[in-house]
Image 1 (cartoon, rainbow, N blue to C red):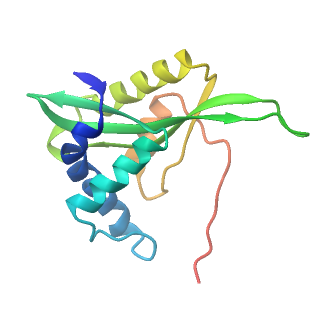
Image 2 (cartoon, rainbow, N blue to C red):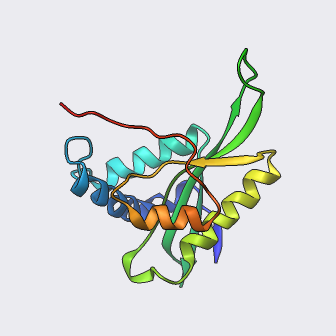
Image 3 (tube, helix red, strand yellow):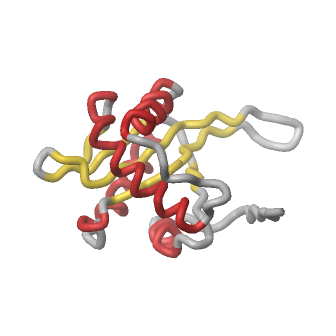
Length: 154
């Protein structure tokens, strides 16, 4: 079952965020670290909710097994671009033992439905090049790369 998470769900969301961040820390340890405890992760997620992020959660047996964090972003008109409203998919994670069941795909579909209902005509997402699963998920959801961002570490 997919529903909207609230601050009451922070204790169940923290371990999922830890799992996601551990993947990033393993691949880019110069940027990410995996030392944060539950309290710090709950505070981080709580601050995101206060700043307008929304969290969709997939529950089975009353326990969160996956989540998707997103927000709406309004881009004002400028000398170069039209005004637009878009959904921003910031991260999605499913507990390892619950993967390969279509949970992430359903979370993305629900996010898209909700963003569209709020006026978005497109959504954006970024993923790290080491994360082939995220790339496959996003391409499967119809997202095509539009901009390349490169980094030079020194």
